[in-house]
Image (cartoon, rainbow, N blue to C red; front, side, top):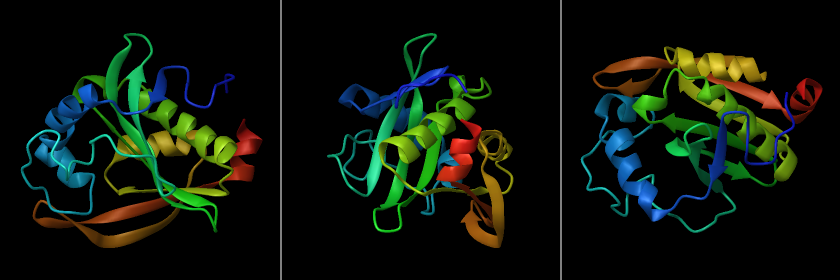
Length: 183
């Protein structure tokens, strides 16, 4: 892997969310009902951009979560959102997630984002374990995670209610020592 600063990969950089990002992320990620419903454990509800319940709103720093805006390096354009959540300082673990605007999907950014988040989690935060929970048919996320070294650990059969049907969820994990061995 190329030498990366904590928040920069080969294709993307992660930065703090700014107010100008919120409307774009709400309109292109939240208002994409199918994608939004598949990316959260809650039912989709309409919301005005920037509403206090928006997942994309600018938030104060927290010990439990690290939320970033993703910028594509080639165009210096907002490409999506990424972060660690459920950060557990005692067990040194966290969950990893990302969402890309439609125009930035299928360009290899997801793998680079996962790499940068792993570097941030393991090297900057000193975590021991990162976990990804995704739908079994989210082939792009599964492939990105596995390219970075995540291993499939379990399948929760029909555990996610998504747009009128139950879907399987896959849990993938990566340990710091596995990440170090690949770096």
